[in-house]
Amino acid sequence: MTLFEYAPAPESCSIVTLRSHYGLFVDGEFTDGGGSPLKTVNPATEEVLGEVAVGTDADVDRAVRAARKAFTRVWGPMRPADRGKYLFRIARLLQERAREFAVLETLDNGKPITESRDVDVPLAAAHFFYHAGWADKLEHAGLGPAPRPLGVAGQVIPWNFPLLMLAWKVAPALAAGNTVVLKPAETTPLTALLFAEVCQQADLPPGVVNIVTGAGDTGRAVVEHADVDKVAFTGSTEVGKQIARSVAGTRKSLTLELGGKAANIVFDDAPIDQAVEGVVRGIFFNQGHVCCAGSRLLVQESIHDELVASLQRRIGTLRVGDPLDKNTDVGAINSPEQLARIRELVGIGQAEGAQVWQPDGQLPERGNWFKPTVFTDVTPAHRIARDEVFGPVLSVLTFRTPDEAVAKANNTTYGLSAGIWTEKGSRILSIANQLRAGVVWANTFNQFDPTSPFGGYKQSGYGREGGRTGLRAYLKES
Ligand code: NAD
Ligand code: MG
Image (cartoon, rainbow, N blue to C red; front, side, top):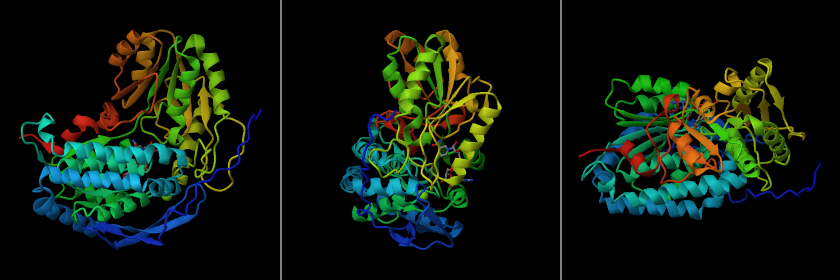
């Protein structure tokens, strides 16, 4: 039953100027790349947004040389307080141009405008503000009286939070006195290139930030470059393992932020409506393209039926469609490849005997879409309970006792995040201490803050981003 029908409320795109061709950003200037350009597409409409240069080994080498020169001559020797001023300036420019960044992110990625506007862009600015404050206080980072930067950081990021992942990587690196060569994901390069314009606008010295676009080969060239001192990667566990192998035996330091299969644990004393909101936010935020998504709902057996019924009722009210519409809750799947991966895993879930449920409603004809999906009758052995789907697909499992909840939650090769829903504070503390997950949320989910370190156990990677702990990835003790 539809109670309310909303008129469309589309955000205007007029604030964004799309170019037909985008170059690499090396040594403070936009230049062509040696590879054959790739096209970036709006996944909600299949429209080509622009052609983007592809960096070859030689382009990456140019970028690393520029970063090295800037590190040695300008950024490394600069007074820390002055580095901080640049970071503050970048943070303010991100705020000033927030709408432009939000619209461009939504066009290139497919995420709802409400999310890019209220989450991605403000959090990216917050990361620069937070790290700007650290720039002249590094002696309090816990690494001795005068910690030193590592040098040139090679950073490779994924497509799910393009600008935000850039901020997580670039802000701490610069605050600690490093320079960077960053490779955005091939399906979402545009906000990184707009960020390059912000670097120019902030008068950041040339070579401090270099952005080299391209696909996996360009990423590999960044990671394997002999003059890179530190590698930071966020993306799939498979590529993370390749990178760990290639970095092993070199002097490079490495942080990896990989996949997840988080448990969201709901006890029978939890406020059900609040838990339902948290479960929905946990798995359908950003179409489920979230490494810390609450993709496994562990619900206490006695409330299973009630919770699933409320959940389905709530999911029935989610609006799937035009990401630029301010009413939209669930946007487009980022690429046809990702859509195919989601479909394949959902097919396997059905073939293995789990019960699939999706809400009624029509999906747009063009573009990449997948309905919010719930699997019940899932067992821990099912692929949909083990593999990261990275899409809007929830697997529901049950437990009877707290010990069983902990055992099931930890029964995963990953360990990035988890959620606990209960009225009892003592239970929150005792369960959280037993979970092998880098972040544990209690009676909430998917909350992010630059002061709070984020990272994983096991195949979710190693190292932390954010907070004082995150600075350690970009400093050496002295
Ligand atoms: P991916 O790991 O292939 O890509 C992430 C980034 O790494 C991109 O910029 C890509 O160009 C680059 N890259 C690819 N191969 C590389 C290599 N050999 N060396 C260096 N860089 C390389 O991820 P994907 O193919 O876009 O997605 C596959 C799966 O990964 C998803 O289904 C999801 O499960 C997972 N994923 C996780 C995250 C996360 O935040 N943890 C993000 C994206 C994808
Ligand atoms: Mg795109």
